[in-house]
Length: 132
Image (tube, rainbow, N blue to C red):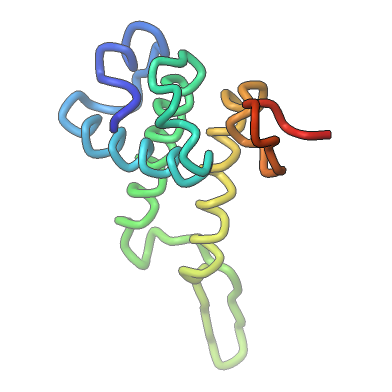
């Protein structure tokens, strides 16, 4: 389930970074990430405004990640360079992947932190509230 549409992105989120043609793909990826990150709780609250905002924020972050991954080797970030017997190394995929996950989580948490969807603890059997 996709949590936000392009109209919501433009009018409520006031987004400008994603084109209308790219939004369905990025919003689908963002929604899938939110399902994973909330352990399925997002699907129980699809109309929650905070969830729609998080979907837009994560979609924008996926756009940034896609732009980074499509850069040529000359455009990538240098990690180190030596002069004697010249050597250069670029930032590897593992570091970029780790940073990408952190950025996605940060974008989602900004909107979902107060919703209870990110709670990782145990719930009691008769209610929807976390046990203390």
